[in-house]
Length: 300
Image (cartoon, rainbow, N blue to C red; front, top):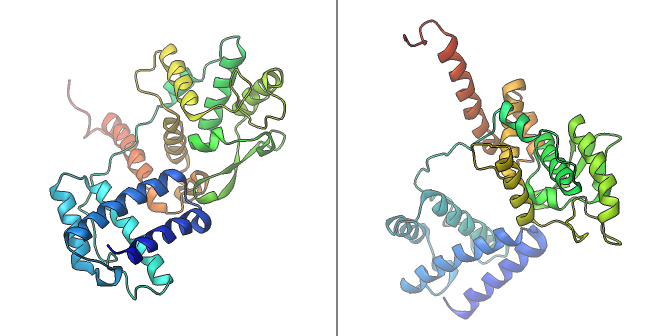
């Protein structure tokens, strides 16, 4: 690619940071994906973006697949290309998007693991008589109560909580804000933790969840503390913060079947993302059927 083509890439990254406000993680992934396509273009002696067509994009995707890249990774690369080419169209550099009609190989959809209600109850049993254990308990109660992402949890400030109204305000993906209900058990745990927090917090610290040093708790620390709590309770599954979100969505759907409502609570922009939980719900129904239906029960 020539210098002018490389300049368009830099302008796109500025656009992603300032206008789209994508997370550093997403921007970094897009950077790697576009870099792979630039290497392909250099091998094909394609010097400028207007000479790239759908045949080139299709050949690139097929080559990535032959080299062992999985369907999901190819989907992400094509998504990055579509985003980049749409930006070039917006800026008048291209007239059409050469990646629009290109699809990755179909990926096998993996269903997220969840904790059943009994194991979740065990995990959320009363904590030890220790401020940090009470903090961990409050974090887990809130994750399960409101379906928060890990980044949303660690980003919470005191002003985001309204325990009187039983709500929490979170800043989700794409800098979208949503207000979520907080269950009574989570309200109770948070109230206890906030009293402990007052004695631990450094001056001026606004975070809800802080560490021993009085500063905002980091992502890795939350992961480690939740893993420790699960092992202490003898949970026979690798427990991580996102497991609470999966369990929250699945248990809500099992009880209500309100897919749109769960979509809003999770903050999914596309209902297709939420629909994975309907498959989990079907598994639950299938187990009930196998146990209860006279024609489904196996003879002993």
